Amino acid sequence: MTHVVQHPDTQTLQALDNAHYLHPFSDHKTLREKGARMIVRAQGVYIWDSDGNRILDGMAGLWCTNIGYGEKRLADAAHRQMLELPYYNSFFQCAHPPVVELAKEIAELAPDHMNQVFFTGSGSESNDTVLRMVRHYWTLKGQPEKFTIIGRHNGYHGSTVAGASLGGMKAMHKQGGLPIPGIHHIPQPYWFGEGGDLTPEEFGVKAAQELEKAILEIGEDKVAAFIAEPVQGAGGVVIPPSTYWPEINRILAKYDILMIADEVICGFGRTGEWFGSQTFDIKPDFMPIAKGMTSGYIPMGGVIVSDRIANAFEEKGGDFNHGYTYSGHPVAAAVALENLKVMKEKNLVQYVKEDIGPYLQSQWQTLAEHPLVGEARGVGLVAAIELIQDKATRQRFDEEVGIGGICRDISVENGLVMRACGDTMIISPPLVITRAEVDELIHKAKLALDLTQQVLTDKGLL
Ligand SMILES: *Cc1c(COP(=O)(O)O)cnc(C)c1O
Image 1 (spheres, rainbow, N blue to C red):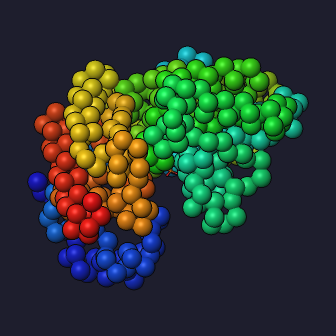
Image 2 (image 1 turned 60 degrees about the vertical axis):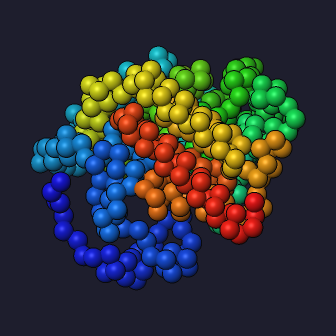
């Protein structure tokens, strides 16, 4: 393949990185000691580093390059749109062709009762938007005291102040005095980690009823909305037991609480439908989206809203005092439109549902036979394995061992990006991955497990 861009050598790049680049979500001390891995190009499901290593990207970047790397049509769409209209806003009663066309496309893919889209620059901004919309909605309805939003421990909704507050990541809350007021967290539906002696089905109901408990404690007239990912992504690919969503649906309807299904990962085919809410039969009033909507080629996010919300905004009139300079950016919208076109032409969502998803999941299950693996789970093209010391009791390794991090580093060294969430190893590959590439992924994941086991044996931990 020809290189489009020339770059300095690894050492020079790492020196620049160390001197000037402040990384997101990183331990800056160890990063500076080790030096960042420089990713210089990518094609299909593979990335290459500056030393020429080819690595299978089992994470699709950060859960986003759904159509894979190197799709020229998206570059062409951006180029065309930049020449035609590189920027204009939608603040003062203006719009432009790509943004209205994109809104229509997304509304067609969304559940029937959701027909309008607000655009943002990222998933985090989408959740900031949702928080404002939820509270604005109840104010319009004459119930401003319906203010509290209920989220879940270990949920992830982004890294802005509202996003991190809605999320349930303890490490994030510790920095910056979060969460902000008016947000409450309930336990997550994580059977492997927290299910104890209950069956998954029993535990699913119990975890859902935590929502009802919280609503009754806070007061039905004070709770505005519940926010949850259909499948928790950054929390470790937590897939709720089958009993969970039906019980949540029942509770939300009973107390008239709005549902926010954070589709930033699940949206755009990841679970084998266009949206995770369709896979799990969730009834959202809001669906924050980002990531797969442009396959990560350009930053863009949005919030799909139900007719109930859109109608309330319209009926009462008055400004909704919220928006971003880049809301509905024309170049991003043109790229998103082309991305959806590619996905449709390649039938990628059906491919995930009927072909490559079931294939990946059946192969992924073979990892459960490995002595280090306590559970293998997944849906569509997202999956996890739990690393444990004792299969029978689901006993984990001592936290100090840091087995997840060990396994991740070994995996990347051996040509596969797997991510570690604590001791849970996760994958979320591009939707275009082939069966042969899935075989390679599984082979490399097994190799990483074997080598991790060897490290533990050498350290006398097994
Ligand atoms: C990544 C993510 C976000 C935040 O999106 P950004 O684009 O990183 O701001 C929000 N919600 C979920 C479920 C995510 O996975």
